Image (cartoon, rainbow, N blue to C red):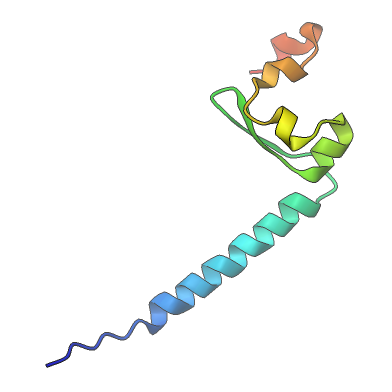
Length: 79
């Protein structure tokens, strides 16, 4: 006895999702704009352009409070 299930549609959807994620990743990483992602006030991601603009390395910036990177006189404008 055997049970056969056609998973073609699921596999096609997985391939399309992977392609979409690759396009998004390339766009974010290779864009001309600095991009960061914050979660609960902590820096979770910075693309290479943002690191280039700030002079930080990802290892030293990640997981630190974003407000550490904002001048004191500009903090009222953030959040």
